[in-house]
Image 1 (tube, rainbow, N blue to C red):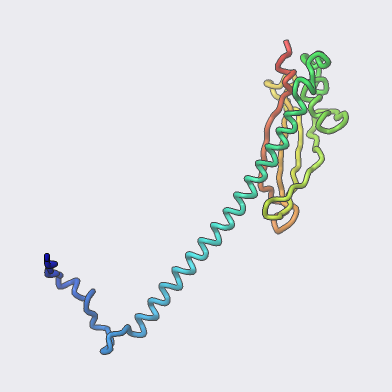
Image 2: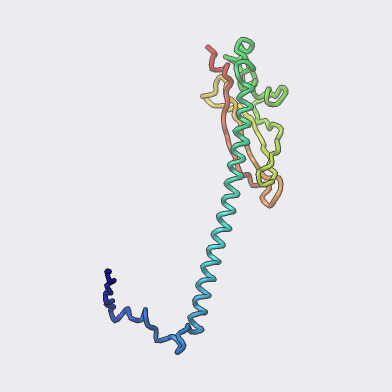
Length: 195
């Protein structure tokens, strides 16, 4: 049978205090000051760890709300997309909108009128009816949509409609603070077929 070998431990004189403490009590326990320091260090560590966990939970909740708001905006954009397809807005019936004289005669105005449910005049921003959504955490949010016809050189034919989304909570302490602001531009498929 093989006997285990024992190797002598060579310690520098500076490291011997790790193994033998001259501050130990005669019974071999810890002194009161050592116990108090250990409790203080442990309490500090637990307090910092708990604070970090609370901050992480708050950030996770905020990220979940922003993610849900993005999904709501995406769903609304998909619904708008289904309303501006060639079957909904055919080119044949709207051929005159290919070369409009002003903003109220272009495809952007047609999309804006369809979203508003009636005839909207002028080029000023128009606020559509707001919708309410409930998050997974039970918090209520309002989705506001503002449509506008950008007066830019790229939109000289008035084919592009701009949509500004703003998602704000309807309850809680941050009522005026939006959690999401998003701007996008849409164009009817028929506008791409203009000659």
